[in-house]
Image (cartoon, rainbow, N blue to C red; front, side):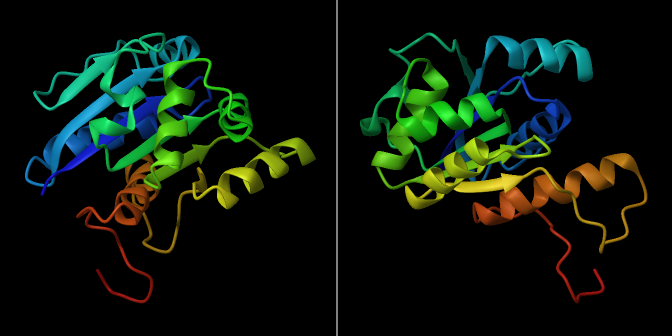
Length: 188
């Protein structure tokens, strides 16, 4: 059965990762039934600064406002399989870790945790302070996956885009989706 995925974009640098993951999810029509997309206000601003205008046109991507608590992603009964917050600010991570569902992104993440569904936070911050680390610990103990935006080099990416895709493909692989990821120790 095709997956229902939530993608949230927050105001950390790294919007290019979100763009790549949305492009890949759009291409995986056989594996993905629906993608629900939520931008934080700063997420949209950073995307526009780093990537350009937000032009996302796909029949399986539905956009929701971050203040729309009537969106399907606000309820466990909607049956989503996974949520990716890419990139994820430390503020967003902290609100999720503390259970503060003050916007749709935090509420949807809370729903994923309470329903024991997959939540992946692609964090973008360095260095980390103890508050960040404790919040990451809380997310991990609650069943979420904290995935720092660290691309890999062992596949010998030939371009900036190929390097970015090493991270995106790994996130899709964690979700069980066909990403074409380069595997350690393989020649492909």
